[in-house]
Length: 277
Image 1 (cartoon, rainbow, N blue to C red):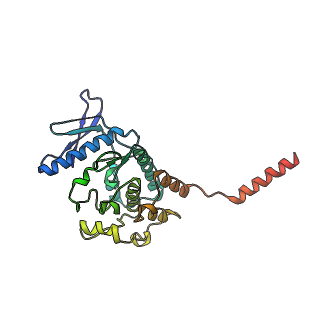
Image 2 (cartoon, helix red, strand yellow):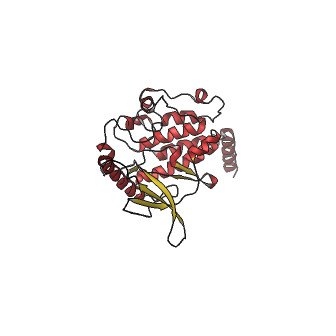
């Protein structure tokens, strides 16, 4: 939809990222891209989160928007070195649930959560990028103007409801995050085909492969695979209802198990002490 350039403030105080809208398109496509660009500007205007980008300014001739420059590597590039352990994936996923919860609370559904739209910085600090196909509550969705066969978003990461052009909500981003976690943990995509259309159709009628079949050498903590599979449920109603619910499930996996025998023993000690007193 556009190209991103690195620039700097006039006074040289900070670097910025400048996204310039594509202009070499026909009139119909230009109208659609302009409408999508308006949505992206509004989405960035609403965002104010440490793991998201925000709007610094925008203008015309050609149309552009300005954001703070964020240094880091795209997750897609990080994956070139191989899958990541759950300890890192959970740290990344927690941050993504936090920024998605913020976006959803502002009426924004990202609809394009994927490795190439996530920057990984120092200490695994993430930044969610590119709200170019976002949907904003209460505003017209420009994608509805396009050819019914056109699907917006990456074919490997779109949710089934995006493929069939049905309504989207927070659970659409839960699906995208499930795809991202599967990819980070196994190094493979859960749904893939011989081409774009075949990959899109796989989201509708394909089965989620087991971690064992996708990456036999990968070892994950108990509960991780079932968590990811729930995110990838074909029906939105079967997924986690929102980002905070997914965050709580991730925390539950990483939380050390409660040593119940110790708890009971301590309780008995307390009771004995009270009785003695």
